[in-house]
Amino acid sequence: MHEVQEASKDVEEIKRAEIHMKLKIANLADLSIGLTSIEIFPSPPRAP
Image (tube, rainbow, N blue to C red; front, side):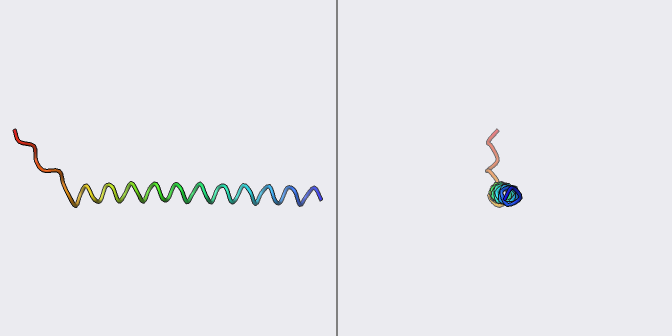
């Protein structure tokens, strides 16, 4: 019975890690989209 508890604890850890990775990937995607949009629409040059 003790082993089953250990296994389910591992599953919880894995699920948490997966969610964490998905959030990280989503954040990276948002960042790269932000960077790309800056490249596509460069800010107009400032008047001297």
